[in-house]
Amino acid sequence: MEKAALFVDVQNIYYTCKQSYQRHFNYAAFWAQATANRDVVAAFAYAIDKGDSKQQGFQQILRNIGFEVKLKPYIQRSDGSAKGDWDVGITLDAIDYAAKADVLILLSGDGDFDLLLDKARSVYGVSTEVYGVPALTAPSLVKSANRFIAIDDKLLL
Image (cartoon, rainbow, N blue to C red):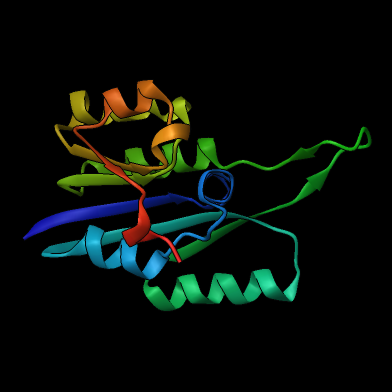
C-alpha cells in the first residue's frame, strides 16, 4: 500500500474556499479521498490559534478525523496587521516525511511551496499532490505537483 503524508495549510484553505465559493472546506471528504487505499504515515493540520471556543471545536474535529493539529499563536501587530503563517513549519515537516512516504499531499494554494515540492521530488523521489482552489492556487505550485486536484463541490460543505 502506498504511504502518504498529508500537510494542510488551514488558513490558506479557509480563505481561498471562502473567497471563491463562500463555503467551507470538507475535511472529512478530503481525508476519505486523499487517503483511499493508502497508509497514512503522517497527517498534520497547521493553524493559527486565537483561543476562541468555535476555533477549538474545529480543531477537535480535525483531530477526530485523524490530523495532528499544530498551532501557532495569532499575533496582532501594533500597526493593526496580523502575523501567522506556517510555511517554514510545513516545509520542515514535509522534508522530514519525504523519505518516509511515497506521496506528499499538500492542501494549499501558496506558491511558496513550489520549491518544497521540487526538492522533495528531486532528492527523495517522492510523488506530490496538491489540493487547491483552482482560481487561487499559484500556477507555479500546480506546475510543481505531480498531480493537482481542484477543490470543487465534492470537497465543500
